[in-house]
Length: 75
Image (cartoon, rainbow, N blue to C red; front, top):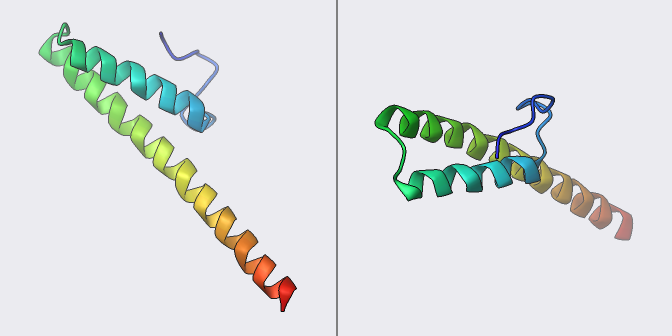
């Protein structure tokens, strides 16, 4: 499955990046790609991991902000 042309890395959702990463991993694990293709898949996987990590980092920050706000409100 290819990433749609209208989705860029900047607009990719966590779910889109996660799903594409699963496809990349499956292709690498299949072992049917050439060395060059494997390297390109690995590089794509690294970008997708970074996208997922950024989403998770942002989610953690939002949760912490809500917790801090909740703690201030309950005082």
